[in-house]
Image 1 (cartoon, one colour):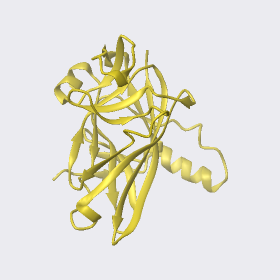
Image 2: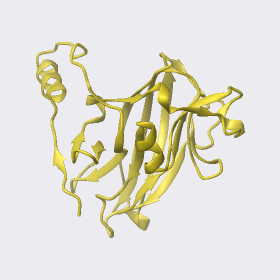
Image 3: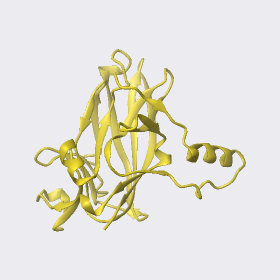
Length: 214
């Protein structure tokens, strides 16, 4: 069993105080995570509501998604493996599904977790993660995707299609796939986790910031 520390970061404390005062919290910088095992999508159930966190497995710390910036350095660039959904560029920025490979490149090893959700609570013992929005540098983008193995897509930000936006995961599981970015820039990725409890839909939505360096 892993040990988890729930952390209300300085950013979160400051933002809460400023929100209460009706002030802007944008001046406070988020924590930057740039390497190591990090569960980007990490769902929890408090008995009433679903919640989304970013879990830094290396430090054993959880953050509110708004308090974290995920950094994708130039070292993440690899040759385009040639899957059609990755565009025609010669390179992509890739956070791999292989921890040894991620560590060797000094990049994040991103996970999708339902480990904190116990069996017998959610209908079908499963929840669904849905990509509800994606932008790059403030505009809509088709430059983000998540895929497993030999190009098996889980998510694709292409706004021209409704495909590859949702995927269900069994509770109490830990999942990894390749996170690919086709262009540098600042991405805002919005995900929702949803399940049913006693026939009632429960969900939580959060936006994640990913900065891809050229």
